[in-house]
Length: 206
Length: 206
Image 1 (tube, chains in turn cyan, orange):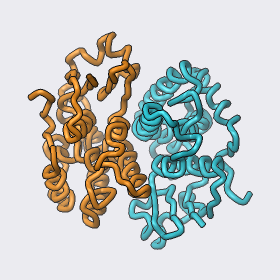
Image 2 (image 1 turned 135 degrees about the vertical axis):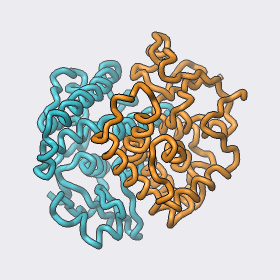
Image 3 (image 1 turned 135 degrees about the horizontal axis):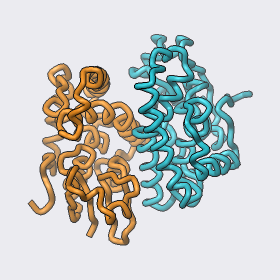
């Protein structure tokens, strides 16, 4: 069976669990929470030289890393993969943008505030610029979602699954003010109402 | 004709020019160097709400942003697009990683040192961590290129075009020590020897 190493509390890992759940793809889950020792084990490092999750191990032992590449691998050809080439490219544009402008601000600030190992980074000169840059990224999403129901197309795509992961907890975890972004709030509810949605803490077999 | 707004000195823009040149796709180039006023013009902002280049404008007026999404749009089906699904996903994995771990360190440090508008950021507490993180990203590439001739497959792919852009100037622009990464140095020569290579300062019609 397909194996997935993923971190229960992480948005990058959640994206992958959410897509696999929505597509009803069975997988064995290996929880790799920070501090559990899983990602620092010799067994894991032999599979993933970068030492990072999420990581997929196929039945033949081959591996694939990077959350958004795992999304494209398991999303291609599904209802989350636009058939129109330009819509597909725009979906990927949002996913590249997520790794560059959103994960590095919204997720990073959430990680600093949520994980005790990052307590030393809770300084105004770090948190302040991240708040401003994260609100800027959220404003870019809000502007798009004010014009279209989903990020890349008229229907849900991998871009929405990708960006839902860290956006839905941007307020609770990262201290961002989502009330400033009404189009994002409505989109979060649309994504949650889509067939097969599972929350962050869902794990297979539960 | 296809139009490309791109910044002559930027790696994200160069990636796109390099692929279009290699694929012999004709395009009208609109130079959008920082300070030229192009990206702050009302005409440009109507096309690109984020105000960023590279930006492609198709003949029907539709647009596409994000350098790596432009690469996939014009690279799909070409010799830079692996036919094996796992190789293709690994190519995209390197491209997502580039936006998250490489562009944010190698390119950002180069941008601080190269552009006068960033002179105020030339402080040890900014440059030091970027040097360390950038060398870490280069080490990840070097480890892969020590095992395989190209990043995602046995043949050149979009991942190599993508990561060549900022890596080839990491020493000159960013002050990174490429002599520590012999596999990267050999790979840079391989990419440059591939058919149709053009340097950073190439522009169409010249």
